[in-house]
Length: 191
Image (cartoon, rainbow, N blue to C red; front, side):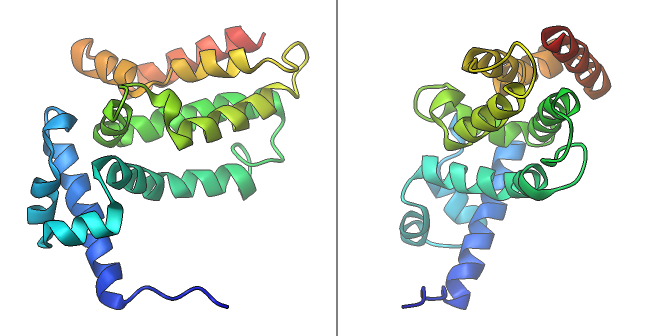
């Protein structure tokens, strides 16, 4: 039996909600201040529609994050150099971290909102497991990194949203400098 196609109005509502949430999180000084009521009002839908479509605030944030992350996932799983599977591991690992850094810089508001749901830590989020598994697999292709999930965790800690936010907002670090420093750090770890 084939899966039922969502109704056109449900698809429109979902897109409106995701766009509204994205705008609100981007404008907010603090992600925890954006409520489901705010998102429903911004999207022009009832709260019931919002809760039926996403369940709760955390799942809405996860859905928005995953939607924005999907192009990078595709590039990593089936794309060309430097993110794709055919890239040598010593080039691919830094490229993966750079892509994640750039994504979090471009979507800081959303990354912070996701990390602040629940425990205030990214480690329980599905996207973290995916990045860790992917990076660990690449690192295991390098001499001296076989079986070490710790190295992948340590490298991913360098691109936590709260750290990026601190470096950009509190320290005034530019995008270019963050990328250069991450590349230098990654090169030291990999050597």
